[in-house]
Image (tube, rainbow, N blue to C red; front, side, top):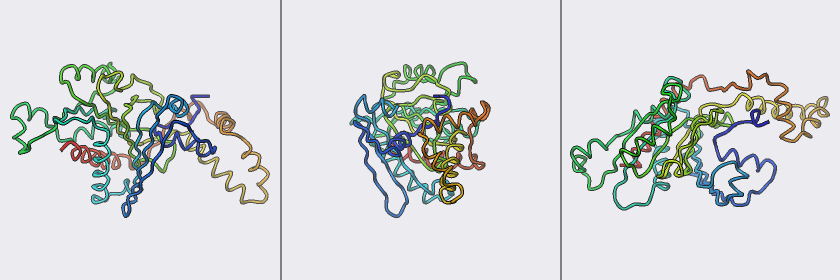
Length: 316
């Protein structure tokens, strides 16, 4: 059944499955913040125990979700507010050190595939400082303390024949950064979260996991230094659309007196049985399909500027 389950990279959506069943997860703490006047909602979820991690299907750590309803709209002032919030949240997860940090930003993904090009485009727009600091020192920026920021776009295995983890580990051995910030596109369970949600976590990331391409993960245990992962969902599983359509169909049936008996029968199915029904309806070809909005090129371009500006503010 695992290959027919609705995929999501968002910890918030994984938790929502339990809320739908009115199940409380022990070892998982959740806090919500609302920014007045900006329509920005921030949810911080801390998975504190191994049992909580097993129930959620996510590693122990902190998962911060920034939801901005208008983030898919071309509004520079609004995106600036999102960037400022992102910078604040990233600073919260950075290692606590007195001296300036050396930060390696890794833009994961395939530059040639628009929904997967978010990571590389964020690195393109970053303010890279490491080479200037090595050549001229911190006073080239007129500041007492300047973080050394470097960037890398490792590509994907189909292009390089190497895992992203292998490439980044080699860079770490040479440049000795204090922390990695990995940027990647994610897969969502809900279409309303596409291009409107940013997830920041200190647990690292498994490139390609959202679309079923499981690669070696980037985490503190595998890389030897803290890894902060930032992602935005840009694709949704075709099974998600079928699942959402089924819920909408059931609601419409409940409002029709002639179809209430049928809706009662469908409502009697548990989630596993509904997935079994979806499996029978979906062909193998449709099950491997992922869907992205038609304006994804503009969305990725806009989001790359928003994320890079947030990181530039955080490391300034």
